Image (cartoon, rainbow, N blue to C red; front, side, top):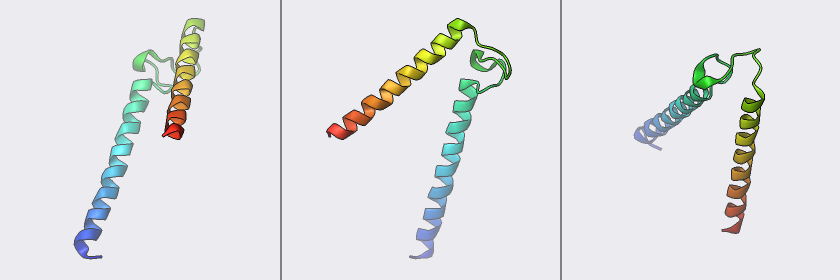
Length: 77
């Protein structure tokens, strides 16, 4: 492999890592992830209200169903 190919490969790897890092940071910031005040999420040690807990559980269940549906559709192809 020539030098240009090696440089391109390293550049792609670094770009991919930086993009993944940025997406994870954005996800953490939007979801709150234990930080008080971020997207209405309670801080660490604070309890969720029953309505917020039900909403959180509903969202988790919907995400689980979406993952299962995606898995099934991949198998059907």
